[in-house]
Length: 250
Image 1 (spheres, one colour):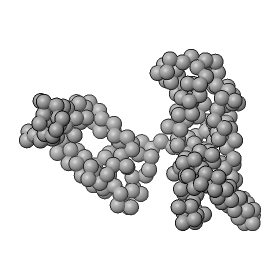
Image 2 (image 1 turned 45 degrees about the horizontal axis):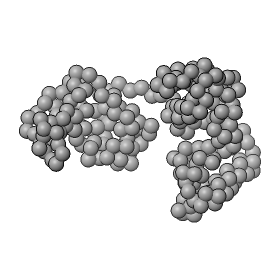
Image 3 (image 1 turned 90 degrees about the vertical axis):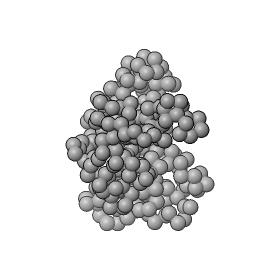
Image 4 (image 1 turned 45 degrees about the vertical axis):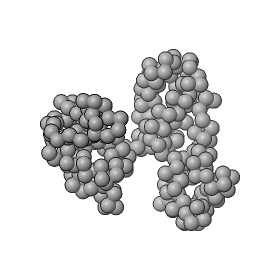
């Protein structure tokens, strides 16, 4: 986490402060902590418990007074059950918890979030986009955003880079977002309680066929297939598992 001069080839003389040392008396944000390897989790747990750090190659312990905020797009409880996240670290971090709902569950909030992101991106990119028209907003609200805020931000950033002025229009949005075909099936499947069994089965088969044909078109390239289907790659893997297609699509 912190280096000391001479600890290894290329190490800066006198040492270089690591992230935790730089964040002392402040806040450090650990994004996607659920992806942290187990060996790193052990080190993080020790830092949080002992409230001190040691530079690489050093012997002196440095006191630490840092607020830690961690985020994960996967439920850490499930990762604990799967033995992918340490239970003791989970409870050490789980002091004050904020759960943010996915965008698909808060369509009414999407216009506000999207306009806020446009304002941020205008400042960072030096663009002058004035807003998003109503038709584009409706498309945003109908899409299920498997990548959540990151996906929305990426879509907006791409649009602002291409169209640096004026208002965001439907014609400027990625085709997969506008067509949104596979997600129409998802929306119908969520209403399965109200659907006759036969119709639900037909919808499942239709989704399965679309996925198989798309994978055939891309020679089983999952990244390209997910892009064509307008879904995140992780969502594609979930659908392959649901339809028991994993072995056929290796």
